[in-house]
Amino acid sequence: MKEISAGGVVFYEENKNIQLLMIEDKSQKWTLPKGKTENRETYQETALREIYEETGIKGEIVKPLDKINYEYYQSIRDRVDKEVHFYLVRALTKDILVQLVEINNAKWLKPEEVWDKQINKGYPNNTVVIKKAFDVLGVNII
Image 1 (spheres, rainbow, N blue to C red):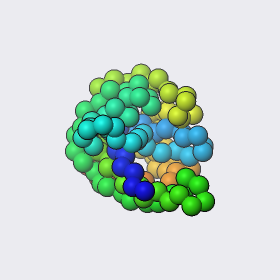
Image 2 (cartoon, rainbow, N blue to C red):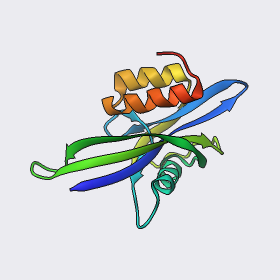
Image 3 (cartoon, rainbow, N blue to C red):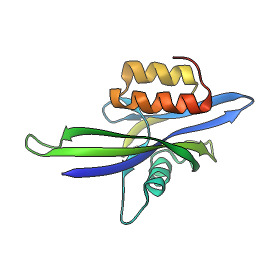
């Protein structure tokens, strides 16, 4: 089975300080907001909708970052081939409203905190996406 999702590395900049949004999922992993495409949505529309649904943050697409692929199992026999399209997204709002049905938490973090959570409590396949976002944003902490 194939599943297609989209999401984003959401940021805002204030007084030359960049903050990025991460979510804690139900597995206590820190990750990026994302979700499955619905109906005839574009990947960009899916990314913005999912970011808003999970965190209450409205955003605008800055540019595509990467597409990652991985597999997981819904059950012992049901393998899912997952494709996720990630975008760099500028936050238009900052007040977080966590959708507790799907995620545990969401926070604005400094780039150093994002990197720490990614390395210690994140999913390895997000590393390349976060690095690309840092490159575009001019963040040099790695």
